[in-house]
Image 1 (cartoon, rainbow, N blue to C red):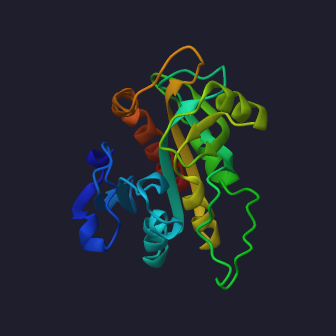
Image 2 (cartoon, rainbow, N blue to C red; image 1 turned 30 degrees about the vertical axis):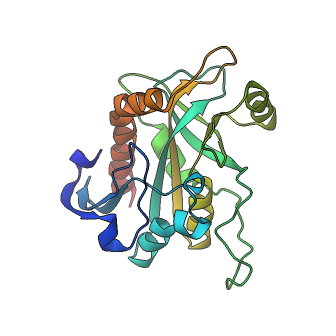
Length: 233
């Protein structure tokens, strides 16, 4: 994805961001231009399961807002809970379930009571949905955010399905809450790296391989959305 952005790189240490500390997260910010738009792309994030606080996890969102960003695209690798999903598909988040037990907003904030209706911007979702993928399918659904780092038991996966989740992962929900608190429009994109079933195991290595294989699909959806947003501006 970074290869599509014409710009220069900054290590997270240079911008005061917490180090991701997990394989597959580079810890690099690229500042440049993509699809005629000025962008900052963050390659990697901090996670609750690594011992970081909700404020740490949402540092990059707050930094983006402070530098003038109005829209943020949050991507993640996720396990598919919806039976119609296949590994390699892309899901546009229509809503989420925050099951981390955490929030990035403190009661001493100026306005801690953030309206989360349409947390994932409907207009931008519609633009993203008009993308055609060369391989894999494009879906829309509910993302369940859990703390991790363990994967779900079969019973937990069934519970999440019954709660209405279509995919599950260990990020994004706190960042979305922080983004909405700061007035940013949010587009959430999940790459379905594996379909969760009770009769097979999943490993981090498998998730990384699937993420690498599907990264161009995610990049294609983002690029299409950026071009369409330019055209409608």
